[in-house]
Amino acid sequence: MNGLRALTSGSPVGQTVANAGATRDAAAVRVPAVTGPQPPMLDDDVIRPAAPTCPAGLIGGAAYAGASGPPLMIIEGLERIFRTGERPAVDGVTLDVYEGELLALLGPSGCGKTTTLRMIGGFEQPDAGRIFMRGHDITDLPPEKRGIGFVFQDYALFPHLDVFENVRFGLNRLPRRQAEARVREMLELVGLSELAKRRPHELSGGQQQRVALARTLALAPSLVLMDEPFSNLDAAMRVETRQEVRALLKEAGSAGILVTHDQEEALALADRIVVMEAGKVCQIGTPDEIYRHPVSSFVASFIGRSNIVTGKAEGLGAETPFGRVELSKAVNGTVDLAVRPEQILLEPHEKGEAEVIGREYRGHDQLYWVRKGERRLLVISGPAEQIEVGARVNLRVCDCVVPINQDIGTLIAE
Ligand SMILES: Nc1ncnc2c1ncn2[C@@H]1O[C@H](COP(=O)(O)OP(=O)(O)OP(=O)(O)O)[C@@H](O)[C@H]1O
Image 1 (tube, rainbow, N blue to C red):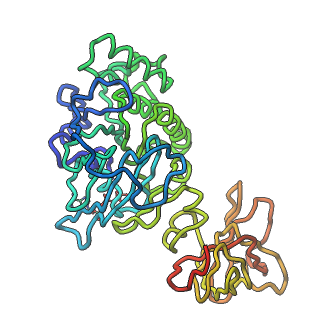
Image 2: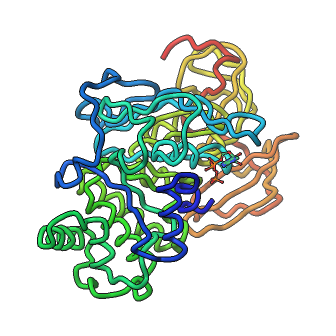
Image 3: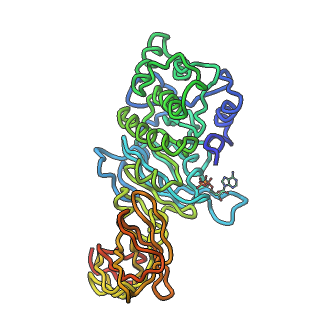
């Protein structure tokens, strides 16, 4: 979905920003005012209720290990039902975001990521649920009163303004010298001081992305929303730019919420990942937790790849089509198990239990498809191994396997 239109359509302010993306008319654009740790120039734009309306504390999901205080934002039971939909587009989303944390909303197309982001930004009104920022209920505030910054998918830079003027845009309420000092500071932060006089079309996609980020960060937001911000970049530029964006947000001390359907991007960039499916949050955790301890076959298959097999578990072991495997948690009964392709070793043997039916060389590793009885399994091995298609192999699982769908079995110990 086009991040700019998706994020902004449907609200007067949003509409203006969306139009700006099309017309590039600086005078017509109203960039949402934002607040943050410094400078204090936009504070009077933001409504601050006299007392917090929600107690600071963790609601939903796993805690962020890097948290040094209460959450910056608490989102509680957010719901959005479109008249055209058979089910809610967003269905009871509850999560929190900590100061300086980078959170990725990850899930397949249509699972409600953009709608969730639009509600956080104030461009879409929820049908139920509340959003609290530093303890204040901001659910009913317009976008420009929320203290939140935006980086749009197509950057929304003004082609007739140079880099310096693009970044200064939105700082026009500051005295000129103070605004210019802030722009210089931001350009230094994003490493574009040398290119201050260039127009957007004289920059690479990655540099344009940095200008857009500098323009947002100039307003010192405590939270920056980004909808598929790297989708316009080629693969190599995407990898480089996403690390830069992460570093810049960390340096600026701003938290970020990033919408992506790219699991590799979420794993590489985020402090925590919120996995969504059909409008609901199915798991929140660090990239490592999500990858190594998926809570369902959906998460196990969407984040990385998994062979889902059924096993008969007894404590920390289970009988499976691979023979006996060790489990990461003690369970009893019939359980589904997520076996990662890299956890399976292929041992060539002329009377092996399985047959190699496909092979894809990828340079850094190889994918093998093997058939055992009716089952088709995916295996990833190192690049040096050479097993021909048609060869017989034995399969060995070389690591602890994660039980999922625990309602099938009985969890007997953590
Ligand atoms: N304005 C709207 N009117 C009606 N239905 C909508 C509207 N916006 C979104 N939807 C529907 O809500 C659901 C969630 O859409 P949303 O854009 O939030 O998903 P997404 O996860 O961001 O998808 P993508 O990755 O494709 O952008 C989809 O079924 C979509 O068709």
